[in-house]
Figure: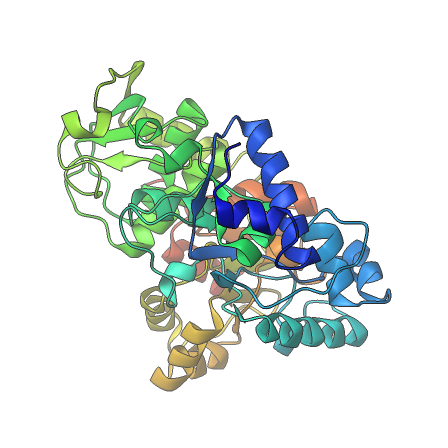
Length: 427
């Protein structure tokens, strides 16, 4: 790769050993990808905590969190002192909600380490948003901005809805980008790689959040890691619908970018979405495909009696919490069912202020932050069957935790939490 003078100086150690190791990692990474240069980034979303058992062992070594960062973010067996970050950096979700650690089965000593890790991270200048949806709580890059983001549902939202530019990065590359403000210039940073590959003709109305999840799940399954261009959308989707569509498409497939003709910023027309390229295939989405997506995501589900309802994957918006509070007001959960709602801590504060938390807790449910059931691998004891309004969580959690999982609308899920039985079906 070709380096400018500043980059060469960092690689030569002029700014200290941590930044030198970060540049070395980015060089090896970029060369493996075939990148010819680096690009400046002032917006990074990654993880630098130590919430897994293996990482916690490193946190107990001399150097503490510096040892964790050195090993897992810089690929450095030698512990280096980590300086303050150069790029604006946001921390993604972690492995627990410290306020509900006991309910999630987290030991007190792990919570203590979590809090120490948060203090260390914030001391570096990393923003402790602790969410998979940083664009909800203050990190909103603009069209054309080069970013270095982890987390599949965040990446696809960043590229598609915001028109910013990022590949799906990892803990290592985002850690190095935090310190250097650099990331390899390849993939979705380049104009020529952002054009559509597949045309999706949408033949039916797609209006509800659940329907957007089903559409995303079907499209992701078909196109895998390519770029679908959707034509025929009749209702402009809001943030929750786009959030669930992207999360579903990046779960059933590896979609990192899509275009909605006339809606997303790089697709004002069908022609602009494809640019100089022609679609490699045309896909139709109608009632039969909708049914297929529903049956596919519910493949693990057999028993209707449930023990757990999980909402908030990706993390709930304040609008979704408002909707959940309306559905729960005046009701009480079934004694054998737990309902956990996950959201960013900032949005939880807003829900507290608006009285939604009180309504939800009066029904017996909990609003949790900083994590989700998949990240924490935390579900209520005795859970055999769960219900979700998220295609992403319905896709991952049954396999991760060995349970059955039902996908349905938010109303279906809250009805199940109250009745103890999942009665939803595809309407």
